[in-house]
Amino acid sequence: MKQLTIISGKGGTGKTTITAAFATLSDSHVVADCDVDAADLHLILSPTIEKSEEFFGGKTAVIDSDKCQQCDECIRVCRFDAIKDYTVDPISCEGCGVCVLACPEGAIAMVRHMSGHWFISHTRSGYMTHARLGIAEENSGKLVTLVRQQAKLIAEREKKEYIIIDGPPGIGCPVIAAIAGVDLLVAVTEPTLSGIHDLER
Image 1 (tube, helix red, strand yellow):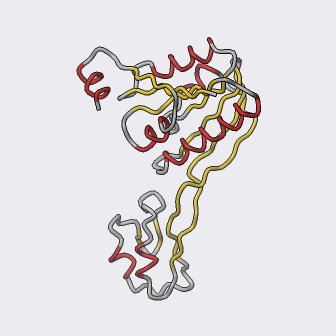
Image 2 (cartoon, rainbow, N blue to C red):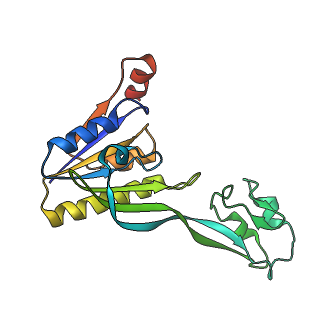
């Protein structure tokens, strides 16, 4: 089985359109949409979801109001200003856990929280794995890895020759997760200064 990832230095270059074209041309493949922050491949391939699962990517601090003595130590050590009125704002919390270590009463715990969903779907051109990361959520690299793992399991089970991966744009962690260990890589760009600059990065 061969894995092909289509990437771009920036969004809007036609990466997803090329991925859909490859999926249409191949008759022995699984498609993995690894652009989990802003997926668009579903708009072209019109998947029917067969399986949906929650994705737990990180942890958020939670304060037990029964144990909290309101000593302000957690507020003092939080570099993200995520604690107001002895309540943690889950969007501002980065999950570092410093407040847990600083709390003399043991009133703060790190709790896993749902960061998004992942899916196994069927399209007119075969199976597709994809995901949707929640707004302001992190750990997109972990979710990309999960989407790729599910695609590989399906490809092995169904004896498919290719996994065609629609990678995320840019150069960050999700891109690294989308290209690690693939056999082929296609980089899509556009003939503009910003397009060429982003491709070279």
